[in-house]
Picture 1 (cartoon, rainbow, N blue to C red):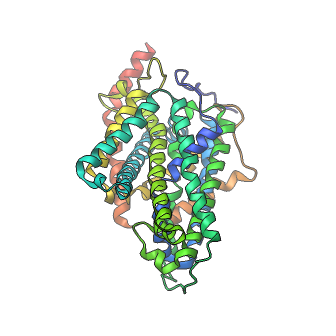
Picture 2 (cartoon, rainbow, N blue to C red):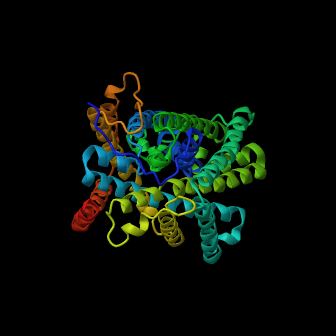
Picture 3 (tube, rainbow, N blue to C red):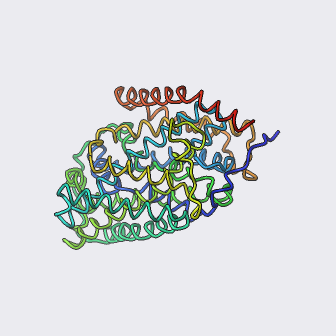
Length: 445
């Protein structure tokens, strides 16, 4: 029997379609990683590096199928937070929401900091503390203003940036495939590298769909839009990463690629087209990172909005749940989010915490897969007929097994830090229990 569910938030505008969701997901997944990961993969696995991308793509495909089904069943703003809350209860939902937001904040801050570093390659003065800080503030101000003024504008911005940053990368792949100066060097770099450990690192390149699904309450026709948008983004990302890796290895050779840790694609582009090619790739890196932060600013503040809406944040819930009277956007959450990103990026003291993002994301994915199983069992339908992949009954279980295998390769200290963050979130949940009960009592009366 279908479980009756409440309607989505009527105050938010449902303006995000397939192209908007796909572009948002693409911009979040393709951030700064594509410009540095080829060297890491080559150094760990040598010529076998593309295999790790295939494994990551397979694992993320399983997770995305679970997200597609959950997203087509649950239309409330909050993405995974909403899925898990509806399936497993408010406590599990709150922990997932906090985990989602923390991962996204540190990831976006790291990318924003890297953006400033890449911009300094083009204009060295930006390496100085004050110009660097001003650049970060200017970038965030522009992105936040566009998103506060409406989800239409935020969506158009990420769609534009998806096209702008995709073209240089496609040109890199095409030019690298055609260049006659390819290196044919023996593979001496880590022929017997740790495949599981490398996959654990590279999965970060494929993460991001969980943030893109946060504004589910603003998605048109979720049962159609969510699976199509995610599939389009995932296929594009997978092909692009594998193509970039293969071309970089062909142009530089495995050993030289592994040695070019700071800017492997710029090194490869310099071999293809000299300084001009290297400059184009450096500019593409800045645009790509700008698009990543833009996608995060479109999606992640909705998690703050959802947590505030449900009264989980002491003293600030009411403010964070405000929707702009004119633009119908969660403007307070967007401003708060942008301020936090700016502080973290300017201070640039969170590089070590970025390593924890993968463990946090994989933990969140695992919980979301469990939620998919429960939503399916209860036949939750908030937006019409849900998406269901043929033969997909076992997908959540296979996804859980693959995620557990990947987490097995994580270091114990990283797991302990994530568990500590979850414990802190649990204390926050308990501390707001009384105020949330009182709020519900007032509303009921």
